[in-house]
Image (tube, helix red, strand yellow):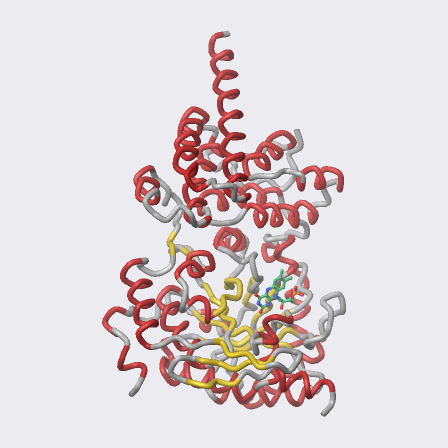
Length: 344
Length: 151
Ligand SMILES: Cc1cc2nc3c(=O)[nH]c(=O)nc-3n(C[C@H](O)[C@H](O)[C@H](O)COP(=O)(O)O)c2cc1C
């Protein structure tokens, strides 16, 4: 019996594509992308980076296995709204069946789905998820093939990979992924064991991009690694020949990176507070960590930051901000526009 | 087999049943573990729950919170942290906007609602303390405002 025959198809909406990421990547300008971060790339943060010239935004990796089986996991892992576009939802998965189910459930609410083939976290790798997939080429290709065979052009599918020590192996993988219809590739220029403190290998990204474009001239490639300032976007693009540049740690610390701010402007703090409260759903520690990353980037004194980290709850944290700064609310004039820190 | 090769073999899960997605994974010790599959019926139940009942993922556009939404959300299973967080958020919003009087009353209401779930569980205790904090602060602010208005 075919599994698909058993599904109540009439209940399932078609994949949506309000804003096609592929068209953005093919428009001749360098596409700016906020990459996936487990825990952090949730709706309030996604909206914040969209306010500052980010073209495409990723969700955190969501585990397919949990998502398709457990409604509490769904509630916790994914919320969205009509402004949350273009959105790529990233999936952690180790088999075709779970992936097809995940795609069926998520595709109506997103612009593309990305498979995480880069996460080096041990628990995931042991399950064959994340970075394990670049060593399990056959499975990865099968998964991409299965999705593209079912959905064709109706659904955009991306893979975010790390590189192997042997770059020929990575190139072969990339070409095989292109041959089964992956819509674009994101290459994080580090191997499974390279620490993020080591510089990203732009030479490797350049080699792979060139190799991919020789055979598939129109296939967009995105470079990931060490993009901390707007200048880096240009430098990385010019050096590697990619169509898009993805920032992750850089944009966590400075969500206005792609708008050309070298340091996180105060406006990000005001907007983040607003979105976190307005959309809801973020656990307190997460909100505190976002604010910590931004304040640190703004060079606020260590003692003050330490004090902030002592706040034990959201209302306490808000009081701390109001005690030390003029924090505008969205109902105030010039809300979310100030660059300088408005100390009290 | 080299260390790297051995490691890569360990990372390769094997699909045992392509209908249910039952997968065999190996732990680093070499021990095998089965990740149970999901039957067609179980998946169809999830599809129904997700598309028909949940109406897809939670949608929170700007302005989604309202008293009506909160009244409806009170009926959700409040033993779940995520469901309590929805209600707490409404209190946070009032606190953020400085609507002290409304926030005070709503926090008192939430204390009544959450009370029965506060059976010594540390996390709920934290939420109760947070509500107490907001109530205290709101009451101080209300008094301060009254004094200022009377000056
Ligand atoms: C906090 C954090 C969480 C991450 N979570 C994910 C993830 O969910 N999926 C993924 O593919 N990569 C994840 N990564 C890796 C990043 O997406 C990115 O590949 C890496 O940080 C290199 O980019 P960067 O130099 O711009 O930070 C994460 C990185 C960080 C710092």
